[in-house]
Image (cartoon, rainbow, N blue to C red; front, side, top):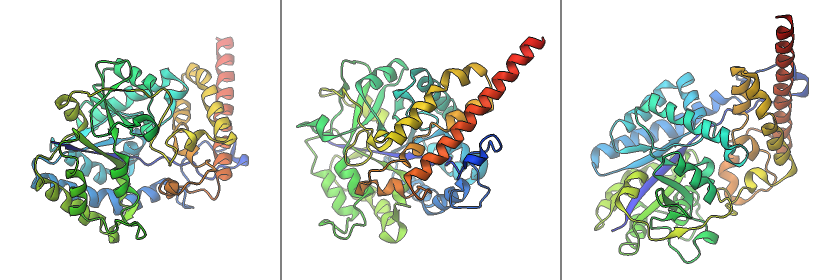
Length: 409
């Protein structure tokens, strides 16, 4: 009997405005352009909320009320939740209403949707802790499942997450890792015994997230009945079908006129008609099923692009330079103990800033580019480096003032 595990990533970054060289030392507001251009984060978030979050939340709430066994899970970045608190409390309330049903699990992740694990284990642990507290504050639940930014995963990450007390972790079911194995079973991370591993069935997930409205696709149109049949074919040959995707799939990446909401409305009913199929959250899957074996991820794997590695964020010199310069400031900025400066430095860690600098354009990267406000990767790099240089200048000024005060006292 295969269970279906839905997981949706919900994230919108605080994008850096067109921050010029001449702004360095004068303007310390990097993420707000006051509505002057399409870089305005509030404007983008309003658009996505109207097209995706509000109608998708209404649809899911109705499905949960109609189907007591229907379960889903979300992972919200901390910076996304902050923006909802500040500008769209009605959207946040609609997510709260979903979680309050008891049929929705909320997962842990890094607060700033960052790649911090690659550069600073201390910073990574801080962000996960801060995120957990934010989830407890807003939704009154404590996460027991973890997914890293963009589903980036490795053996070392699993070990660190297990030490933090999590019971289950999510990963991409990349072919080079799975080999002959099926993604439709529970696994153990390499060398670990307590934490369990759920891997994404990327073929079925991408049928919805990427191919749903592709008229040249041989399976077009994709109906709920057809998709439910594909899942049912795994009956007797799988424990759990992990359907992991961006929440913006519904209404934003796949517009309403494609029929995506109708597909979502009918899918639970179609699945319920199949024998021995139910829904689970990640933690429920980990509690119900025993691992069938161990999976070895010696190198980092992500769910981005066809390569499913780190190249979306670290493939060119601009990205590498920006990342290295950012984390090189960690010790200095933390030593200064200035909350506003530290917060700006952490907001610059959001992975989207580096994705916008990417110069390799794969077809399945179009979804990520959809929210890219820059005319070129070089514009994204220039805005980021100028903002980072201002952070560095602020640090130097504050550190010098601190020395002067200490001398005078």
